[in-house]
Amino acid sequence: MFYAKVYITLKKSIADPQGNAIKEALLSMEYDGVKDVRMGKLIEIKLADKSSKEAEKRVKDMCDTLLANTVIEDYTYDILEVQP
Amino acid sequence: MFYAKVYITLKKSIADPQGNAIKEALLSMEYDGVKDVRMGKLIEIKLADKSSKEAEKRVKDMCDTLLANTVIEDYTYDILEVQP
Image (tube, each protein chain N blue to C red):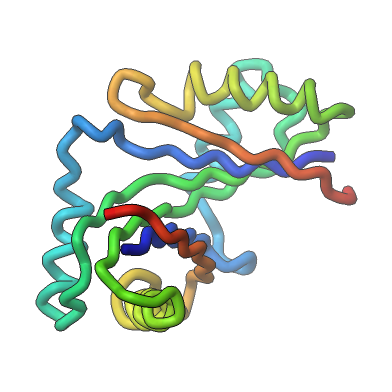
């Protein structure tokens, strides 16, 4: 059994109003060292695959077809083996 | 300069309708090994702090006061040193 952590972030060229709102909130709370904030998504998936290679292929497929909008988003993932 | 990646996830006992919707969508697309999906947030913060200890303390503070709702969410973070 595998556990995939998928990290989805907006591409650098895409404006991130949610991240900016967080940045402004942090600055208004006197966290004055904050230079930039970007907001992304974390999707954790438990998979019943037998091999990590198979799991990786499926996770990549899932990202391309459903989880990420590859026009505006980048994704990376980690795959860990876990006990069922 | 430091770069913090904050991972915010719903606590295990909290229902995750968004994760369930993704799970159902994946199952309907014939990804039949999907056992569970949980949706979380990823917040990337660029910080002008001088030391990683200082950066870590501030990030923990930010999580507790603004970024995470610790009643229903857990958070973890990684802090990396980057060139300005």
